[in-house]
Length: 88
Picture 1 (cartoon, rainbow, N blue to C red):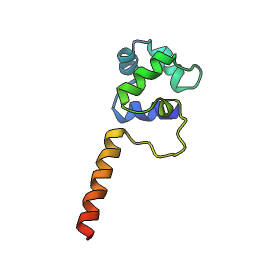
Picture 2 (spheres, helix red, strand yellow):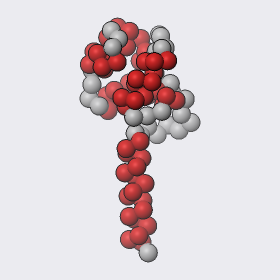
Picture 3 (cartoon, helix red, strand yellow):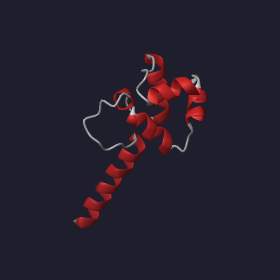
């Protein structure tokens, strides 16, 4: 799961640290990132909540290659509105 690896690294977490947060072993978590195993539904929800993203993003089901958190999206939208005001 490339998105999962990206999200974890973006938070500067090791596999072991994130595994502890979601209550799985480091070995099991490593299988998620390597696409050897898919997380259980409850684990997917924990990951989505922790990273503040959709479950689709955890499962790499997004249609875009851009990976951005909800908070970053909100910040970008606010910046766009400021730019629109300045441009008037």
